[in-house]
Figure 1 (cartoon, rainbow, N blue to C red):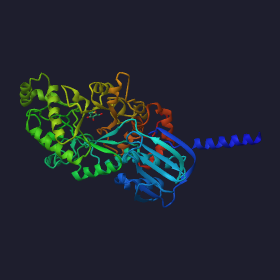
Figure 2 (cartoon, protein in one colour; figure 1 turned 90 degrees about the vertical axis):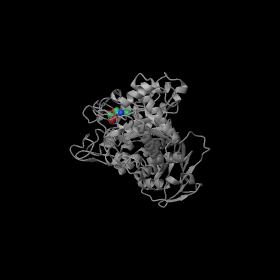
Figure 3 (cartoon, rainbow, N blue to C red; figure 1 turned 180 degrees about the vertical axis):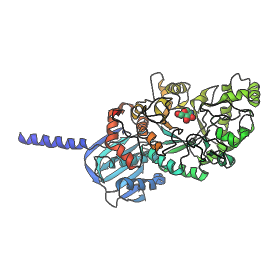
Figure 4 (cartoon, rainbow, N blue to C red; figure 1 turned 135 degrees about the vertical axis):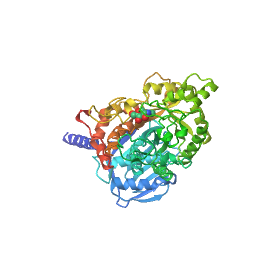
Length: 531
Ligand code: TNX
């Protein structure tokens, strides 16, 4: 009798010991089986990286040493040997894309990915386990994890036009996304307030259009005060960003803001705008900010801009915007009016649609597909393979899927991280006050309004950080982004039935905020009202 009580006590204490060792993984994995015991990483551990994941070998090495303090010896190979950590690719693995299996046992650590991105997702889980609060440094608890994403597109947009963020800031931003298994960086490179991408055939776009303030063609705005302000990325910079992201499993999608939000373009090359004063103001109060749709030469210019973009960015999509176009200017422009009459159009949305069809033909020519803001659905048909970024609200995403387009859900009301996080904080308010809890509550497949076929068109989720308010201090970017992006990552990755705010909040506060701090992120701390 006594003996059995003792055994039960031992059993219970080992169980509570197991339970106590929380791994606190964000985003929450599909399946985690914890076992008793731990693999002690040898101080000169060997890491084996599959040839198919070779481009990430350096990243695996540096991130592993950052998290564990152990500098591994890395070699390329395809076998897991005793006491080693192996990152292998197994394309035949029975898991969805980007999935992985992670096994930690007494032999060592084995990460098998369905692809090189799968391997990297497994790496992130391993790094998080090794930095969980309950885990002793270098002593990785035995576990078996099987994991894969809910959505194939898990993105984040950063507006580098309203404020210019230097290359290093962009690289850091990408690192932090990778740590959350995000896989798309949407790079908002052009807008009214600055053109940031070097285009060799149109040098004034950056010589003039990247600068504002005294002596410049662009007026001071968004925190530049009366100082000269600006900057741009050279083509070499952009290629470096693409390679850096790729080694971390992230694709970079560039955005070219057309035909609206184009003050930086018309200030650099006034002939691109309509040959009228264009005093009509955009939502943001900008004048002369629209490409002339009736000017034939503009399509040649767009051809060379899109060609240069497609040479720099290997990703299959180019984002061609289409939001908030100041169409009223076209109604006063003789060339646009002549085009309208010739085509028999009755409203300016048809002109907008005409413009996008022509742009899509150019994008096609360079073997890319287009993504656009939801307004590009107006005024007529666009190419069936167009991807829609639905930003104005959930209903816009539903409408897009109902029309048969692949859709990314990014409703401003939940996933615009330029929105203030409480009444008293800085940020936009037009969509909502959005704290982490509210962001986390977003469900990308909103209702039974969509048929199963239409639901499949929802390719994923994305957040956006517009930068009008990010002028100072510079670390405000981080404050607005985290931990809301941690919440976003779970929306995009984890199973719907596993989403639970209290559970997420527990993992976040027990281990993950400390991880963010270790990464050097000046995140927004939680007010006590958060739960
Ligand atoms: C709307 S979202 C915009 C941006 C602003 C943002 C501010 C979108 C496609 N257009 O130009 O920066 O609101 O929240």
